[in-house]
Length: 208
Ligand SMILES: *[C@@H]1O[C@H](CO)[C@@H](O)[C@H](O)[C@H]1NC(C)=O
Image (cartoon, rainbow, N blue to C red):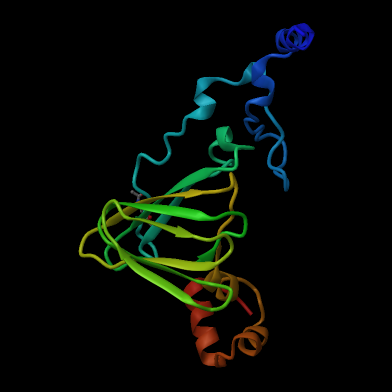
């Protein structure tokens, strides 16, 4: 009757508990669909589970007047393998996090300061929009197009958590207008006129 317990305690003493507890990213090796390879547990320290990069505001002196500061596995190795990550949003007055998706995870946002108008569009093209104030939380289902706009009169701050250590970020306008995708292809696939496509490519740094 006590034999299984004995075997269990033998196994526990042979294999350190930490071996299966976490998989701190070894950033010297490439990222893959299953995340980074694990750093040797013997080399893991408390610092691997702490990230200071979200303490400071991101630089919002840019086109969108906003900054996304990620603490994904590439920045914060401790979240690798844990199915979670976090980021900070700073949105200046008049700023916007443009329509975008995170292919790899759902997002949950909490407003820390200011007012944010946020929304997403479902696969059925239904629209869900809400104005959020300090302390309000909104969730954005995985893969769906969504946005955040500073709808207040002061800088807005939010923290967003993801259900993946590396959820990805694809901004729709950048995908369409900030690269070498030929103007003809963009006009054909979006139904926008050529002048508009050329103008947006100019603003966002695209070519062709
Ligand atoms: C913010 O970004 C702008 C534009 O790139 C740059 O000119 C400015 O020096 C940056 N400010 C800080 C505090 O880094």
